[in-house]
Length: 129
Image 1 (tube, one colour):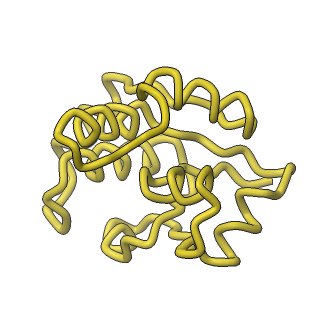
Image 2 (cartoon, rainbow, N blue to C red):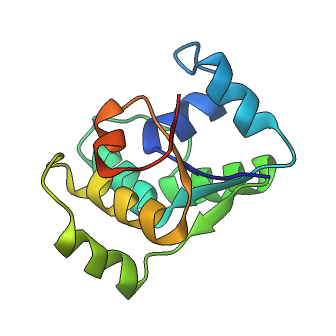
């Protein structure tokens, strides 16, 4: 069993059956033996992008995410003080604040990061793509 943290784009590609999602990532997410997590940081990112018109969802973010978590058996990963504190100590391989928080969550929770963003591996994470 593996514990997977889905990057925001991976979550969206999964729920939309987007062909950009690799077969390796798709198989790992579909594997019932794996636990899949979506960070609250990704929900925040989707809400911001939706409000700016950069992301179009069929429903408001809160409803969309809640329905997709339930439909796919994913778990919402809350943001804890230890996650925010870990960001302070991360090197600046990546500037995106959402991704930096995901990196901190993956490191502190010993999660495998599922992302097309290769820079995540610069932090010593296990990256699945």
